[in-house]
Image (cartoon, rainbow, N blue to C red; front, top):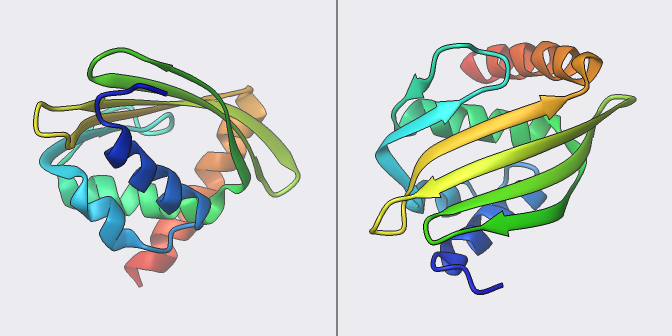
Length: 133
């Protein structure tokens, strides 16, 4: 891959594969004013703290996570993935946009099929509630 922000993307890969370990790696590459776009929550989530919260929860919920395809341009990478939530198979896309400093400024997740989206939503609600406690 010859992506401009390959080193930062490598940190993301290490984080997601570790199922949420190494939050400090992820925190290094998220902009303070990052925008997180969830497949479940309609409104964009604003800021580094909430972006980290959602990404850490997702990394803990998604099992057997594997990227299967990568598309990119100068500042944006689209990563197709397969994973499981319980017995439900998920196909999704992480659309990640970096700013000129190499920090993630926009992170959007899309998931299919509908039953996978429902299972992910249920699991994320449980995970977010337990991390808030």
